[in-house]
Length: 255
Image (cartoon, rainbow, N blue to C red; front, side, top):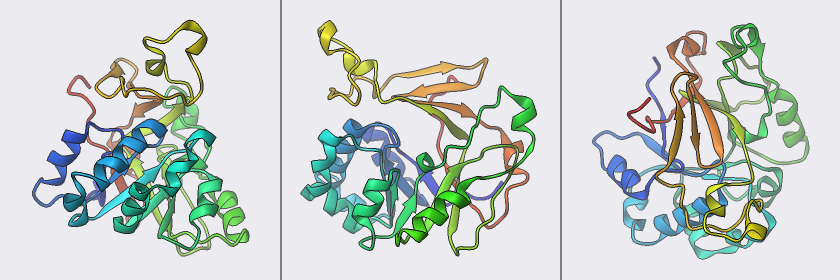
């Protein structure tokens, strides 16, 4: 197995992030969220606030989720710019923010840009040879005058490949493959009146932070608004050696 180049600490408890950053020989970490604007706002305040010295001396990447309109002002906040100025790369997951940050920082296109179907329940698909459809998306981005340094994706199948004529770093997530994401969070509805429940990207008090829904028999786990399945090492057998891995530590010992 290729040595991980990035440890994914997105959507984690802040105390766990600090503990892992202080581990000996910890490689680059990434923090932020792929699905929750509420968590993202909390984490940039955490990085730019009491923990700013820790993050100033450790290389990290910042992951920005798809932000709803009522959260876009966070892009003008002092905390956001402190984080951007200190991080190694910014992982962007929607086209609007990609345009907004173009030319200002080292940008990596996030996994949410690429809509390839993935789910291990369909063996005929999951074990087939598959060339990622990322090329068309990347062509559109470059033709729009936007410049990126890298892109990332989930490992789509056991025989995953990718080809493109741009000199980009390619990052792949392992062992958690994101297969679904919602803009409605059931935890954000807790304690609210019926007319205020199930509002897309609603404000919340981070009730979900310590809750993980696990289905061991089907190898699925729900973290916040995202559902992941869990890959084993056979998914790495045909991965090119020059691809970088983004490795997510276990969410729970129940797995």
